[in-house]
Image 1: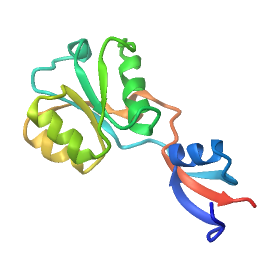
Image 2: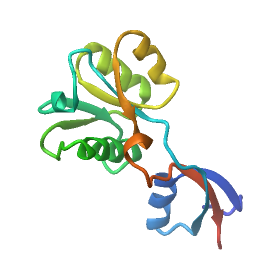
Image 3: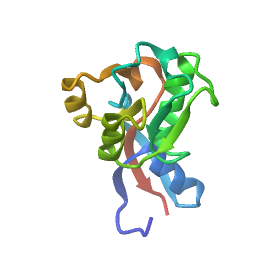
Amino acid sequence: IAGDLQFNHSSVDSTARAFTAGAPLRFVGSAQQKPTFRLLVGKEVKDWNGLRGKFVAAGAPGGLTHALAAAMLDAHGLKKGDYDILSMGLDSDRSNALKAGRVQATLLIQPADFGLIEEGFRSMGFVGDFLKDCEYNGYVTNHK
């Protein structure tokens, strides 16, 4: 944004927020189309309906993990109001909340999810399994 670089690698959501705030940026190419986030659930959750009335941990409202979690839940018939998303920015915070039972699901990226799966937490699948047209990160230019 300051003009020190003319080319960078960035997430789509970070670039979009900067662009809509007036930054002279252009997203010019994809580096990774399918995010490697997956939704992990507590051991008591057997299916998607098991998340009704439950807490889901994701990032800040309007951020990538928040939007992706909501989209995955929506793809399985869970609408806003069927669950509550708690905002937790770090994978470690979301992992610990799931382990402690404060939330019943969380969206995590690799390798943060591997340990939880070894501990018996279940995967409901990867974001890319359900959201087919979802850019994750790519190449950005400064077009001043």
